Length: 283
Image 1: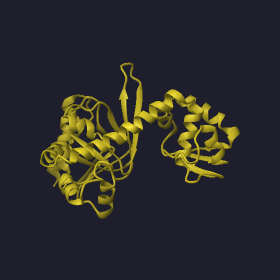
Image 2 (image 1 turned 135 degrees about the vertical axis):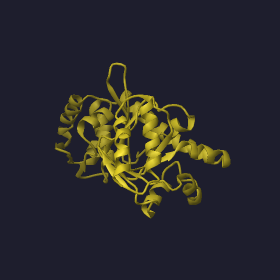
Image 3 (image 1 turned 120 degrees about the vertical axis):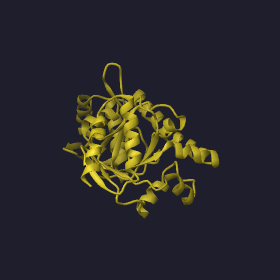
Image 4 (image 1 turned 30 degrees about the vertical axis):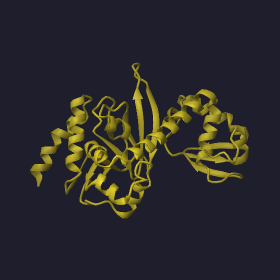
């Protein structure tokens, strides 16, 4: 058993390379290990594949995504096949901008950020995906290259679905393409709303709206936990970390205070009025 484990080490080391060749090796290794029956760890990635079949909770998560929601469970099971999810730690790289788009992903737990690096070397976060969401399906469907990179920001389990398998099933069942459109429309709606907020809202109002999305009540006091670190949250909202801190300070007169990762809101309705969002406008 020791010899096969040693054989994987040089390949795993190559995964840290930024070249297109590394992307191909990363995809090939993932596909190979998803049908394996052993486990090992390399850096932030834990390859754990004793379980060949997703458990009932996993299937419910997969079936509830916009991509698979309109399909029968039998079709979904054929698309997913007998692959197993991988366990990733924070910082694990799923794919890099420019690599061949060979598959897409379903998050069973944890969070993933999608980002691009500008020619000046600055990072722009395009989106943060969480449990029950899919990403990279559009790039994979076009058969081109990933237009952005994907990095795990909160450890969890992620299922990778092979692109060629999906394209083959689409040829056999064209109605699957409609589900692809539904999923792409979901992502497009999110990006349009994000651009709209960045263009039309001040930094404090952007932060206020984000906090309101985390609230489970529409009035009275509320305590919410920031889902990820402040620097990443600032990038997600289209601002610098120092701008985020200033925005929080401007919300203090409205009863908003921050203690580490916890935000206390004295009155949700007052914050909603400031953000320009009525309590009936949940979209």
